[in-house]
Amino acid sequence: MSVIGCGYLGAVHAAAMASIGHDVVGIDVDEHRVRSLAQGSAPFFEPRLEELLADGLEADRLRFSIDISDAAGAAVHFLAVGTPQVAGGHAADLRFVDAAIDALLPRLCPGDVVAGKSTVPVGTAQRIAERIAATGAELVWNPEFLREGWAVHDTLTPDRIVVGTAASVEGERAAGILREVYRPAVDGGTPFLVTDLATAELVKGAANAFLATKISFINAMAEIAEAAGADVALLADALGHDTRIGRRYLGSGIGFGGGCLPKDIRAFAARAEQLGRGEAVAFLHEVDAINLRRRERAVQLVIDALGGLVFGKRVAVLGAAFKPFSDDIRDSPALDVAVRLRGLGADVVVTDPAAIDNARAAHPQLGYARDRDEALRDADAVVIVTEWDEYRRNLSPVHAGSLVAGRVIVDGRNCLDAAAWRAAGWAYHGMGRR
Ligand code: UGA
Image (tube, rainbow, N blue to C red; front, side, top):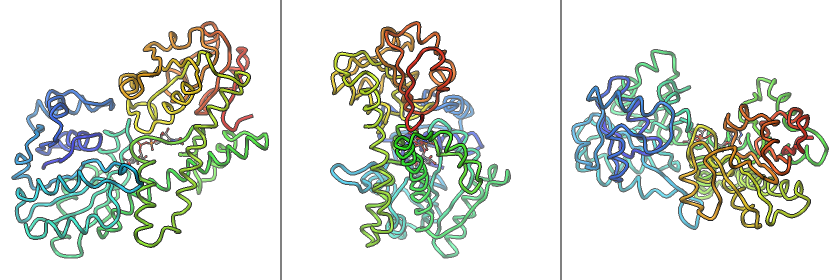
């Protein structure tokens, strides 16, 4: 099989497919990325990826190339290129999808399966299916639900596999081929759902819209809790015991970021508007607005905690990645909080176990410390914005208190034990917590 596009999605997919016995070539236009992958080195932080790369390369089941003609001869071509937000708008930019299809078209043979994994606006798959029809290859849509940080786990043991096909004998055959591709997971009990193309595309957009809505729901409750003197973390625990609601994705704080949820809800709404159904997902604009308000709120908490002014104050920012177990800083709320504080004249020192290099490249104006304790030293306030274990579990409030100039902490992820921090003499400020 070939995997076209070796970013977070494609690189992991290629390595994971090789690990279950397939013969895989990963294709990408980025020479540096291809070279790194071919040497077994992951171009981004992703647990277990390098292990899989090493195994696949050694077993000769995995290779990487910048030459799309190396995709020729593969029976299944996975399309895993990025679909970023267009500059100056909310829709998805399909430039890389179209370029990949352009390049692949002359290499397709009758009976080949092209399996789209990229997150695309509904209707894209039909358009691609029409473009490749003359080659005799068949298009299926096979959305990906992996989470960064858990990408290998989610690829090898997904909670469901969705395959959208055309309603035809060829479509049915292509779905059968995908079932074979994923046999270990299917045999292990993973539900395998066959749908039409449009439904498969929608499952992905709807899943991310739902997750984003759940996070913004609890963050909206945090706003109410703040005004009412209630505690949103306790509220989330109590809500979560209702199995119809569930506790997951009720983590309150500075909200969601990353390369997926923010852009995907915008692209979903933009596509709904094109389809004349914008009002059906008008709530997603509110989900977005609630989410962005939380970053501002975290900054305000730091300002208030420091008596109204952050100018010239040293603020230790714990975290830069958009979430733990990742070095991804795309649309990171953590880094956004740091940038806003810096913009107000604070002397910001950011630390993160994995994302400092990426953060520094994007925001060289911020101060950085590789060492957590160095970041904490002499800080007038501390703000935790990415809940890495180094900050959440393994940082003792007594030890932290011995390093800082002022025992003021803003918990942007509601992940600390407030009582323990207060007992160690800290002024603890959660988001929507008493
Ligand atoms: C998300 C989805 O979870 C995946 O299923 C999907 O495949 C992926 O997007 C994608 O479209 O490719 P990911 O972006 O890796 O995965 O991140 P999540 O783990 O979902 O976290 C997203 C953001 O929400 C993070 O900033 C995280 O800190 C935040 N979050 C998450 C909360 O603020 N509260 C929560 O309770 C959970």
